[in-house]
Length: 471
Image (tube, rainbow, N blue to C red; front, side, top):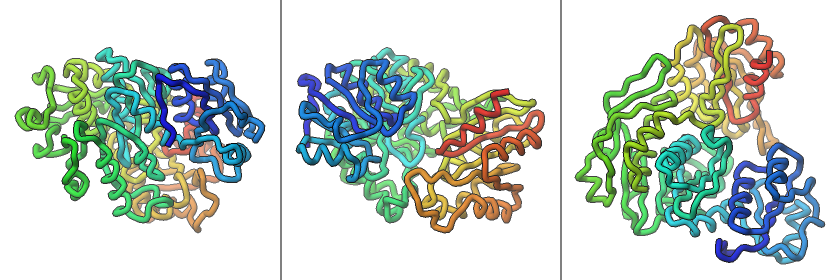
């Protein structure tokens, strides 16, 4: 595999540079003295931003873009063998890496790389750890799967000490990474267009854990069923967080304020942690309040606190960062009010995530809860149809938008109308509309004063929230 060395910058070409992760990695390499350029299918705000920052971008993609002076080509996962640039790279025998392989190679150039994995909560937890390190003035380099509000983007170029990145399990991308601290937040069924079943997913997370070096550490949720299958026999040390005192980090005395923001007392077994070589700075700082809603974010915060302890951050800095943490875009993001009702947008696209978001909404002041849900991929919707219906039925009214196909073309006989029907069977009012315009018209007619509206999904359903605010 091609080795990336920050002390030996080369010319790198990014095929599919317009992606949120690809663009961030391109910016980091440019900051290290690499000659960086790339291409994408279409113009976008990202390609404009890259050009403004001195990175040439070609659109559309064509074979002529692949010149002989390119040392390395990086492909996004969306590039297939019939792509003209892919064909040209192979003809010229230019070395290449996938996006995940490049990220893994880049990790080797940092003193303490941190990779945060899990079926849910990766972006939020990566952002929490990022804000903690920023609060501690640790000058981290960051690569996040969403825009972090505190830095106004998804990438930050810092020193070569700390590198914090998400570690996605889809297509086993995270098995190309080389972290020193790894986090596993949870393990559930998802991405069943790639994985065979839950056992297959668990196997991949076990392989991720095995990649940690002997002097590294795995931070893992002790509530994961049969967690020992993931942790037993690892060469690295293991630190746990979870809902019970058996975990190294747990929360007690959980309460919520009038806006649904949680507070808790951190419980840690200091003697056990010291045996695991986790040095806690200022252990008396045990009371925490979060700047984001939801019980699920308490557990994300516990893992972030554990990582911060491993990084040697003073607990006072950790506490301050979590208190002022405002999240990333599309994670229970407040848009404003329209006709007296509140508009929130959220990225939840898996039943567990939906349940977490709707549970958080229970503690948020409202009269009636409306949810507009846009399923993401036919595979996920069909595989988890009963679970989707169960989770969504916690709302007062559910409005279904068409399934966002993403990479898929086969509908598999599933539709949003079928999901709406299943929700209705559970006694919750549900509707399906084939267009955003129809959904917006329904909301403006039926949402009233003090109601709460959440647009939800991993596609472009946030367009509805944006349109409602343009009045």
